[in-house]
Structure formats: structure tokens, C-alpha cells
Amino acid sequence: MEVVIKDPVNSVQELEVTIPYSEITEDIEKAYREEGKNIELPGFRKGKVPISMLKKMFKEAIEFRASEKIAQRKFWDVVDEHKLNPISTPQLTDIDFVPDEKLFFKVNFEIKPKLDLKDYTNLVIEKPVFKLRQEEIDKEKEHLLKAHIQYVPTEVVENKEYRITVNLDSTDKDGVSKGDPKSENIVIQLNDEKVNKDIVDNAIGKKVGETFTFSFTDEHFHGEEKHIQEYNYSAEISKIEKIEFPELTEELVKTVTKNKANNAVELEDQIKDNLTKFYTQQSEEIYLNSLLDKIVKNNDFEAPKGYVEMVHKRFIEMERKNAARYGNKNFDENAVSEYYKPRSLWNAKWQIVLENLSEKENIKVEESELEELAKKESEKTGISVEKLLKYYKENNRIDSLLEEKVMDFLKENNKPIEIDADEKSKKEKE
Image (cartoon, rainbow, N blue to C red):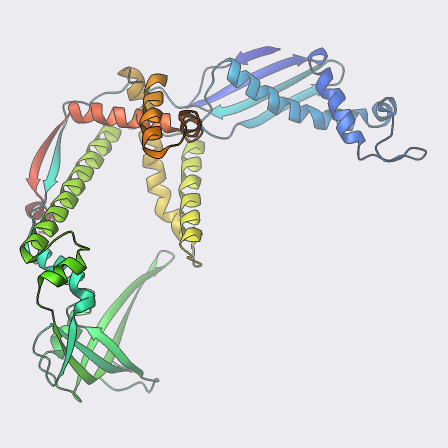
């Protein structure tokens, strides 16, 4: 077998393979036996036609069909032998089969480009620091106590700490009813942040039996065309209830925290600790995402299209599986596809940068490290080391360990500069 591996052009490598007919006779004979199982001729039962007769009558058709399968199989033999690394689906671009003489074929496939990496260390990247506010602690408390809230009937809405029940009537912009069927007994929690501000402002001061108006604007796109539509309503209040939170007794605190806190002070400390950990994690994630984005921009290149498409398909398939897992029957593949297009491009570029960076800095994952991880997991789970190693290799655990090592390298060799997240947000809004 003669193999010619051409130099890549724009991350596309071409492979030419020439195989003498004598080297594929066994494959050809196998093809006759397989196809012969389904061939029936006068005087012969199905599958009993002699191979000599099959060669006489169907040689060209059978051998040409076999040649494509042989080419595909031999291609992967060459990939293994020469340690090639296709990163997207290979394309058979040419095949020339001459019976009794040779099989020649060409395959194009994408490879990860070799990058001359620069500017990936000693970068100064902003790291937002989030300040914990008392109102966030109070809000978390409210969430924990939600099941124990009491709603006390009253006559007047004094502030947003009320719940109202209304009958809604669709109107025009002048407040005249459109005559559509009313939506009755709609319950609105005024302290819910998602509630339209018009509803909260206009309901305050109103009594049972009184009405107030509100409107909201809906903006959406049909293709590239933006549509803006305003909706107007009149709301008649049929019921008003004051939201009253229960007293934080020791018994209630133990109930809502499942005995993780014993009193109101411990509850607040627990909430502070959880929120602080959450904000620390968010801060770290934002910093690392900004760092990686900067490195990709500093080493920008044209990512192989087939590889980007492959990453894009993986994202869509992941979302499809998630939708099935959580019983979402309204999976919109087109919307998911559009959402993941920019992410797929960036992710493809980062994976290529990652591989180049690990090679340049000689960052590797040794087999012994995988074994050590398997031993630790085996002690925790009781699953054998052999099974865990097999699982790791089948699920590319080496790749995730390598990425972790690269991330550690980048964190050690770049400097975060802490900034006030609130101040940063305020400046961006201005």
C-alpha cells in the first residue's frame, strides 16, 4: 500500500492511497460471499449461486461497491498507522478502482492547525468582586419562608407587600374595553420582581371593588423584522391580602433549614455563607471566561469549518437530550441552533488553542495520573479500578484533566485585578 500525505492547506489535509489488487483480494472475496447471500438465479436457490458465476455476471457491480467500503476501512488503517488526527468527518473526494489491478482513492480531512501562540501569559484581566447586600439576604430568607407566609384579607393596598386578585379586561389605549372575554381571578403578588411596574404603582392605594389600568410593550422579531406591540388592560380588584411573614422561631428555623441552623442568627450566617460562596464562584468564572476570551482574541485564526459544525451539532444534541430528560415537548431546534452558533465557533477555537498551548508548554496527562484518580474514586464508590479506567477512556476523561491542567497553568501565569462589580455595572450603563 502506497500512502502520500500532502501538506495541509488551510487546516485541510489530503491523503492519497494506492493499493495493489493483490492486497485486497480477501476483501473482494468476502464481498462476493456477502452479496451472494441475496442473489437468486435460475437453477440456483437464493444464496447458492457459485462465486465463479457471480464473478462472470456481476463482477464490475459487486467489486465497485466493495471498493468504496474497502477505501473507507483502509483510510482508518492509515490514520492509525501514521497517527493522523482528523477533527471532522473525512470526505472521500476521488476513487479509481481498476479490477484485477489497483484501488486508488483520495480523502480530505480537517486537522487542528498549528498556532504560533503569543500573549497568553502576564495578562491583566479584570475580576469582578460582588458585595453582599442585606436586601439579598432578606430576599433569600423570604424564599425559605415562602411556604409559611400568611395572607391576611384587607381592604386597601398600602405597599407592594400585598397580594391582589383581579379580573382583567383588554382595552384600547384610551381605556375603552375591546369586548373580549375577561380573564377572571388572576392572582398577582405585588412584591414579585417579575410583575409589571405599572401594576404595582397603579394598584397601591386602591380598595376592593376599584379598578386601575396598566400597559406593557412586547418586542419580538419575525426573521430580521422587529415588531413592537402595546397591550392595555383594566384590572378590577376582587380581593386584597396583606403578606405577613411568620416569626422566626427556633422551631421554624430548624424546619426550613432541615436542622442546619438552630435560630435566626445562625440562619442569617448560613445564608451569608452560601451567598458568599456563590459570588466567589461567579467572580472566578467571569474572570476565567474573560481570560480565555482574551487569549483566543490574541491568537485569532480561521477555525476549520467542519470542526465548528461538529461542535455545533454536539451542542444541539446535548440540548435535545436535556429537553427529553426534563419532558420539554416544545424543543425548538432552529432557536437552539441560532443560540449556539457563536458559542460553537468560540468553543472550537478555544479547543484548538488549548491543544496548541498544552503542546508548547509540555502539559500532559500521564497514565499514572488517570490510575491514581481511578483508585481514589474506587475507594469512594466501590467500583473497580479497571471499570473506572475503561469509563474514563471511553468518555475522554484525559481531555478534561488536560484542560484542568492548562487552566491551572493560566491561573498561575496571569494576574487578576479586582474591581467593584456594582461600580463596573454602573459605568457600563452610563
